[in-house]
Length: 514
Ligand code: SF4
Image (cartoon, rainbow, N blue to C red):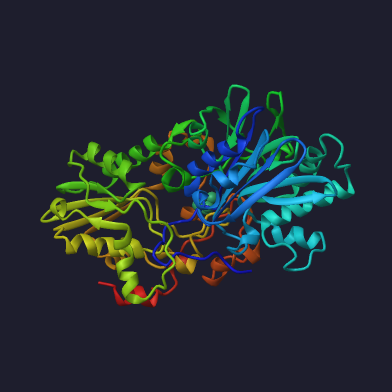
């Protein structure tokens, strides 16, 4: 299968998707879904889509591009009804094509349903094999789940009977492994659900008698809904016309083990989101405060790399007493770029996104706060840009520990061979980036900064401790680095297995190593 198309100028981690669902009599549900997806645009920019039903028919509209490219008044006008789901996509499995845009749609005779998925299944190949599907029969893990539901609805349940989709979900969900927050609908009901580890977020809100589920709470805010609560790990919330939400529990109790993605607090989630009841913005401020305590330095100004580094820079400045200032202006209008990555263009790529404020930088010792280092190409260019603008010293502080391990649960960092911290130790990274000092937040401080340490987190990309077993075929990058052949649930693969590898900087980067 083709992998996702990468933006050559963007080495930030990529979220898998955003999902939204709504049910409300007399409500413009298509427009509400549009707004909800707009608020979730950061979770996926490759494609957008929605499914809408009036109780009789279900219509799906989806296309490649941003929410505002796919939908306008003309496309929304015919989408009338009282229930809808929506999806924004970044592909971590399956190719970046129209055919993989979501919601996924199926019909069994007259019966119709649609599905949107945020996450990444880890047992797709096994499930496809069990169902005798030939390679290439399904184009993504989301497509596979739709196939499994179709099979149940056509073979084991009567799709015309009320609650058939509910029964099919109860049969299929326990067989899925990995990360999944789904929104699913037919012409009667909307279902919102999280995997037993709750790796991807999902919350429930209401506006009067209208009920909403969404990946993040800002998608509730934008439609005027109030957050009721987060959907629990392993819970299915059923939204039906004129009823209060019901909960289903399809998973055995021993599988329920909350492990929300820690990276949501560092980078992925919007700062105005609430996760585990905590403000993401305030968590990021606390990350900066923790870094100031852990890695103090004498400097003249603290600046954040927009956007996610800024609240942490405020925290660092407040805790250290060093003035906060703006050092970079971000081009607000840039989206994904698809220009061929020539050497010259790579060098200019960061300038497309950031421009330095020379007056604030020249002659100063600068503390730069950023969220994470993945391939390191962005930070490498940023440091050069700051030095070219006259920075006397550059001290880099990261609000995440080194990202050494791939994510198999729906984030796209690339594999171990692409991760800078998978190849270099701290001193090596410091030399490569050309900074005067470098510090990554310690994992215990990061967990503490969430304000919900005991609630349960996945931190596998920092620790190698994967909460859900990763089968061999997914584990290719780690295998290439000479580590374990199978990552068992809860196991920790020795970091040295990767760090012992020779420093294989990409050729482009190696030429620019200071
Ligand atoms: S491996 Fe990292 S990015 Fe992936 S779910 Fe776990 S914490 Fe999040």
